[in-house]
Amino acid sequence: MRSRILPKSNSRTLRRIEEAKRRDHRRVGKELDLYSFTRSPGAVSSTQGQIIWDEIARYWKAKHRDAGYDEVRTPFLLNEELWHKSGHMTTTVTTCISRKQKT
Image 1 (spheres, rainbow, N blue to C red):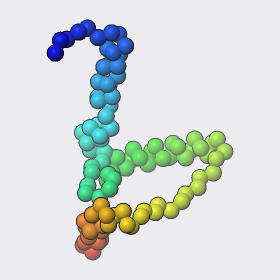
Image 2: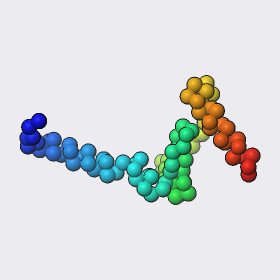
Image 3: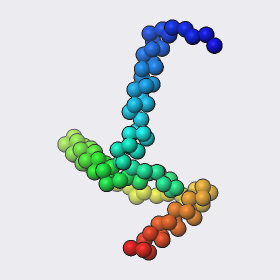
Image 4: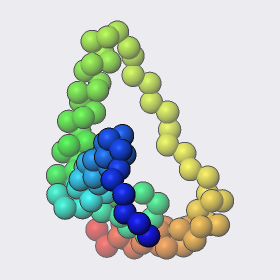
């Protein structure tokens, strides 16, 4: 394969890609111990991650309240059938129940 000099637009694109890699939340979150991934769908916040989450939520709520918006919350509902199909129902629910019984 022959190498060639990239036009400026391609150089700019490569710099943006490198910057995106540097700021990748998956890498940064792991390095700063903000959250971890488990076998269940989604991630689990660490203490540091929860502090950041709470501060962002506090800021967001204040901004919206100041702008005259009311907060509305809906229940967090999941489709149980999908948990069975993915196999998460047996692993996650069993893990959650066993942890709850130990406390």
